[in-house]
Amino acid sequence: FSGLSLTSLFFHLCICFARAHACSAAWDKPLKAVPIREGVHNRYTRKDTTHVDASQRPKQEEYDRYISLLEAFAEVGYDADRIPAHSPFWVADVAVNMILLRAHKDMKAMYAYLRTHHCDLFTPNMKEEEESVERWIERMEKGINVHLWHEEGGFFVSKNLLTDEQLTVKTAAGALCYYAGVSDEEKTRRVTAELRKWAEEVTYLMPSTSPLAGEFDHRRYWRGPVWINVNYLIWRGLDEQGEKGLASKVKADSQALVGTLTDADVSKSGEGERESKVQLGVGCREYFSPVTGEGLGGDGFSWTAALALHWLFH
Image (cartoon, rainbow, N blue to C red; front, side, top):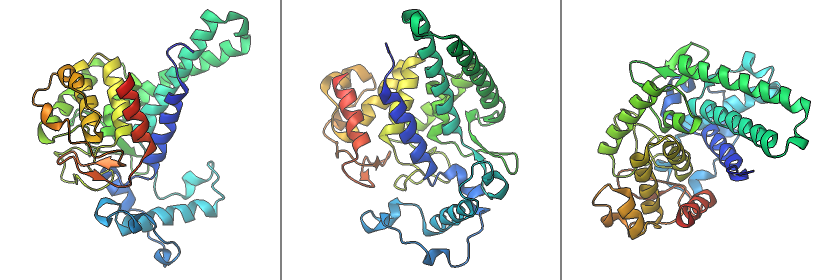
């Protein structure tokens, strides 16, 4: 399909996977409400801390709560219809909702392409399906703008569905509003202003948690580090929505971290003093410090490599 790629589906899936296993600072309050099951720490062995410094990974207490949740889900056979009634953790995550909205819009674009360029393949059933997708988009945009917008903070946030409480810690997930194509210009304007504040506090965009938040930790997993796969989605959204300056900075910072920033990229970024970062690159790490540029987590990560190549050759 023209302008569409299976890689977009890949990144939808990989970011959902990453978020599902995150120690997001936005989830602290609802996660602490999850009771740690007796003896749970004796029923699993962490492998991540055998090859990555523990200071860069979720804390042990958090893992105990994750496994307690998994055991609760196992008791109902991982039945999606039964889990809500048994789960002590139920959050409407802003990243998952933004990505799902984008996926719906991509699907709508595919139907439009078929209808225009391959009308012989466009069946009456597809027309009904297309109309269903349009209703999904309308419903999701309304839900995101009503339930996941924090007016006081001027940012999109997640929501605890058990308490009907917004989780007001700002994370990079809120910046996916551009990728989702959220149609409220005033809201996206305020998000842009917030991101520019972040840029003044760190060396490299986009920190996974606001550097202005008390929960910010520039070396620990999703509590501060830059993730290149998230940066790709944010960059793509910013670029598509006309925020070219901020988009160029996200891209140039990503390339600087990995080590693929060229002189041409420096001149395009328009951010000044970018030359000093050209030789920084520490390779295809899992995530990076937005403060120092240190490579963190695992090494040889394919999503980092794939996106570095994408930016290098496009």
